[in-house]
Each structure stands twice: as structure tokens, then as C-alpha cells.
Length: 66
Image (cartoon, rainbow, N blue to C red):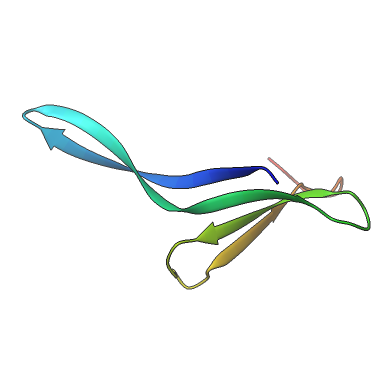
């Protein structure tokens, strides 16, 4: 199973120089539906923000993606 670390950028000032660090907030897993073979992503958050899991699917042919 493929997975990615989910982060948010945190910008700060270091003696007049703007720097960025990346804080981990969760993980993203690439999965496949058993019955259709369709790929989807599952987002697991390290802490709750109203939801502890998000799932992303590829748009269907009828969806508007503009």
C-alpha cells in the first residue's frame, strides 16, 4: 500500500529571513476498491478537526472539474 506523509507549511522569521518548516498532520494512503479496481485516497489525520478521516475519489466523467 502506497502512503504519503501529510503536512502543513509553517512559515516563521529567523533573524529577518523567512523560513518554512513542515508539520506533520497525518498520512495519505492509496487504496484500490476490490470490486471495481478503482483507486482512491484515504486521509488519516493525527488529531481531530471535526473529522478524523477524508476520502478522495477520482472525478467521474460527468463531474465538472473547472
